[in-house]
Length: 165
Image 1 (cartoon, rainbow, N blue to C red):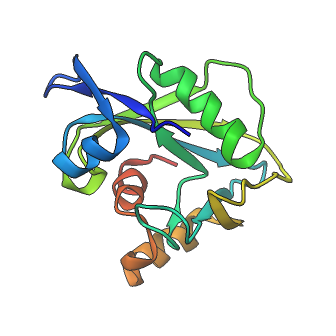
Image 2: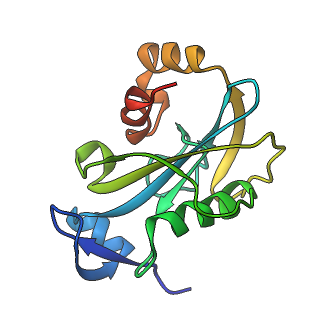
């Protein structure tokens, strides 16, 4: 299987080239990603525990779905694709954009668009991507992050802090 190709971007999130996933991460190049938060009718958020097979941040909790934007792909299309690939949720684009996070150390030099959608599940979790998932009340998530920030992938607390529930 060939390695994924990502668009490399500058400080203004403009494409300046392409590189393999491995080189982007090894060199700390700026690139793009999406995170989607799925909420149910009770206002709970679905979080995933990343698979221990993941190359970055294995075994920690993260957004409902997240992933890199592929070469030539739009942020909105990536968000829809990642929902389908990771948790088996098929949605019609576009998803509701919440906010964008600038590339920084906590995001692994990713510009991140954060999205929100509503669904009830159950979901079909991709075993290579996710070990488990669950629904959590927002207040519980806030306390959990405050008490045990190491339980989460570094981008997730940034997202949660900016989220307006």
